[in-house]
Length: 91
Image 1 (tube, one colour):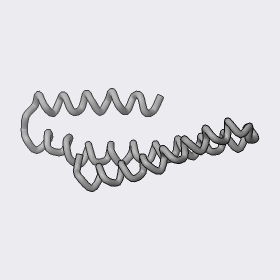
Image 2 (tube, rainbow, N blue to C red):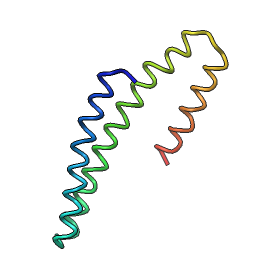
Image 3 (cartoon, rainbow, N blue to C red):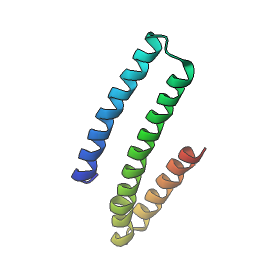
């Protein structure tokens, strides 16, 4: 993973960590269920952004490297990994 992507992901994850603690406080404080659910959706959306950035970096760096390397075994491995990850993301 490129350093700038790693740093951006770490920053986002720190914010998400705070959001999750906030959701836990909302539950402890017996806040309105819909408000809690809305905050959970916000956490999920933030995690999706991190996931998308890491996936984009993987394709642009690791997969691209496998393609340009000419190593057929590595190319097949990277494509198989992508298929597996994408099948989990979309299900």
